[in-house]
Length: 271
Image (cartoon, one colour):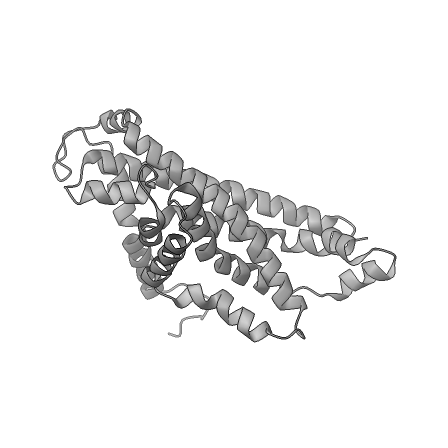
């Protein structure tokens, strides 16, 4: 008997379940073992929140977490601003000279190994005699994540009918006001998605941050890596669980803001 192409078969369901299990089962195990009372991460000793208490009493870990959060927010904001401007230039400026060169240089960090990017930024900061710390890590993360934002926003701009914006200019709006009133609400979901992607990549980065950070400005991934090299502590499970929960909350909030902005943009009169 032929199976309808839109109907889920047993093979498709099995493949979906196995794929989701492969992706999320390790995270579920990590979350469960973050409530383990035992000092041994491989031995279950009952339910307890002692390792969350240990984390909130660990000043070095808290400082590293705060450093990562500040770097993530600032670098994601700068990357979103610069990436959006770059996407507008590449989409609307099809005729200017050097467009191909600019596009290639913008997309280079997407395929370039992070070791090369981190080493080149380190040499730049050394040549400029810049003290490594919060500023250098923020610049490095902005450089890394700006191209991701540009790709996301550019794909959204390419699918927008520009005649609506041109109609607004025909009715008396200058190009800037027409862009703000018409195009910006339409691309706002892509901008929000780009910010979220940049923020997540900044929190996740270890290689580039290890090249550009200095004493007293270690990010959370660097701190966790230095702790894991000496052996996995149950406190690490608690920290990772908090990060997973924080990212989940931010994603939900960003999606809600994106949906509300998109709904307002569609319902509001463009002129």
